[in-house]
Length: 201
Image 1: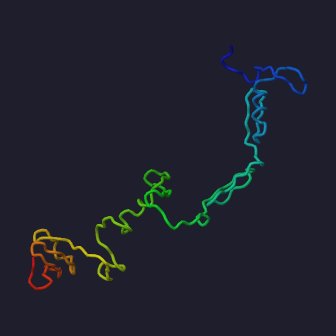
Image 2: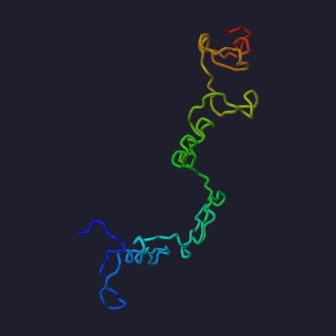
Image 3: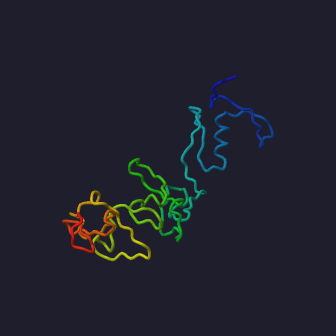
């Protein structure tokens, strides 16, 4: 038994339906005829080498159609382009910050990745419900103006004379002095008690 087939010289016995009889056909010719049937791709046998040649012939009967959120496409008689159409995407008003995901280009890996919505604004915005906010909070554009209104209690940082931050750089700040059980404020030089002008520390 041959271990390597020669498409040019090796033959198959085939039934020629047009003649109603059996005959021989080159292996390469049989393969090229089978591949060409109904595919729109040019397939032929190179009789000089016995190789099957597949050409990039146009496929006029095949069309690429752009779906929802895409534009472009067309008949594959030439190169076609499909573009993302943001305005063509449907709107949604309720999203799950953990389950819903978006496509993001990761510059560190140079590849497109998916990420939950919650990871895009982590640490940048106040949480909608619950959670902990660290660092300075800006109200109305600056840290020294605007009102902060709440229907609940406002908890201040609790310190002792040994643990309270320096008064310098915290002018106008208010804190709770747990060792004195009263509020204190910073005048930029010292921490003073709210109900007295006496220096706390």
